[in-house]
Image 1 (cartoon, one colour):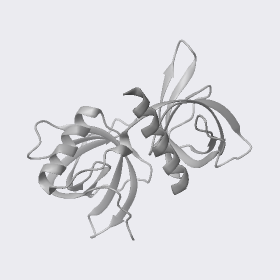
Image 2: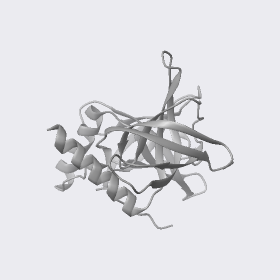
Image 3: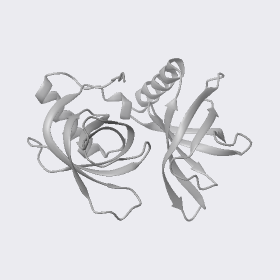
Length: 225
């Protein structure tokens, strides 16, 4: 299996604990093998499903305090009869924990870590979506913010976590549409507006469209300075 890595990755001798989001299982401890600002690799004896969402706590010597984050299982492979190698991609990590992680990686490797993947900026644009599993089911929503990894939207319908969508939208002042395949990673009900604040992550998006999003973020943030 070939991995494509877009992040500085650091081998560590540490541990992590997790629970599967939405389940009341006992928290499990695993061996943390390597880390990046995009995710982690762990060794455990617990089978996990692709797209399982995990509540993570990273226990890394050399970092003051634990790092908490949410992650999604992206692959798992058997390495012995009892042990599994598992890749987890961060879907949510706050600025404080992200900075601690990046500072630790940079100080340990002497390399600068790319931070733009998590830079978000406001986006006010209409988005059309359809379900991958049933393209006849379509909907409209509003894009609230955007980063290289995905979007936050406000939708009238509750989209269940793990739902895969095909989305089409225009960046402000852009005529060409951006088309992407996404998965729903989180949602929060907004009582007053009766809308669902929903996080969606890109699964498939062209490099050209990703570049357009990056340019839009840089241009927008530059105007705000």
